[in-house]
Image (cartoon, rainbow, N blue to C red; front, top):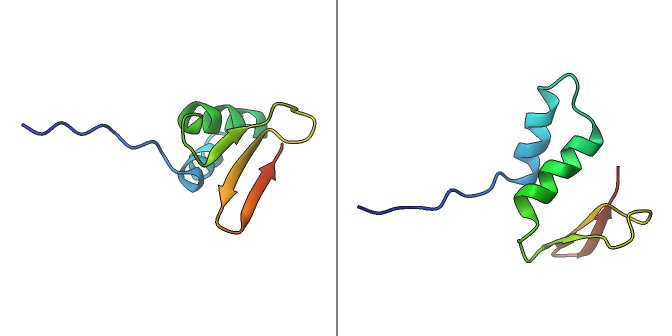
Length: 67
């Protein structure tokens, strides 16, 4: 028997999922992204939330996103 660890949902899949919930907000999206990807090497949570909520290390450089 081979057991596989489930892969976290991707960023676009999480955005798509949030679109289906009428009471979803940008804050709930950020919370889900942090929950799913906080341990990923290419995902960083900003220490200064006023600058950005999180950053994604893109091939072209660091992309900082905030709600």
